[in-house]
Amino acid sequence: GEEVAQTPKHLVRGEGQKAKLYCAPIKGHSYVFWYQQVLKNEFKFLISFQNENVFDETGMPKERFSAKCLPNSPCSLEIQATKLEDSAVYFCASSQGTGVNEQFFGPGTRLTVL
Amino acid sequence: GESVGLHLPTLSVQEGDNSIINCAYSNSASDYFIWYKQESGKGPQFIIDIRSNMDKRQGQRVTVLLNKTVKHLSLQIAATQPGDSAVYFCAVGEDNYGQNFVFGPGTRLSVLP
Image (cartoon, rainbow over all chains, first blue to last red):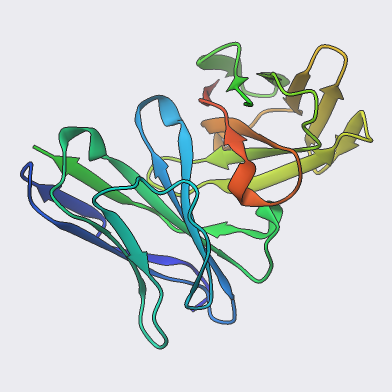
């Protein structure tokens, strides 16, 4: 598609439950990035993929967070055993190259952990 | 590591006036700077970028100024319009690769009629 699509738009989970977020990059884009936006609008880089391969995962929390980009499927970000502090908007971006200025962002998924 | 901050969390301007949004950074090795616009319910949208070898760059109604001496970055919007109402934030990195970028906290610009 011509836009980055993210589903669901909103996700509510009880503490300890699993959350799974999806991202469909723009067709033809090789790179996918996940960001976490918490209160006060601060963005945190989580992980990036080049096609189905992890490109950089230096921002991913060591526990509970995982992500995949499989061929012919939306990319996914999964949080096991969610905690209150995981409440945030999670943005996906895609690009043809690795440049930050090339990234197109999706509308985000708002995760609320109760 | 890099830290990025903005001077004002909110800014209100009259329609037609110029807006100036500021950003401060800490890492003198920072080489690449981006301004984003984020409208309510949407993802960030790239506005303009600048490299450290430049002091000023202009786009359509926007100008970015970079003062490396004091590690300060500003976004100027000329003749602010209602459609400019959004959160603006800067992102700073040592290069144009996202992994090392640090995003600032954002300034909410409100345009008054």
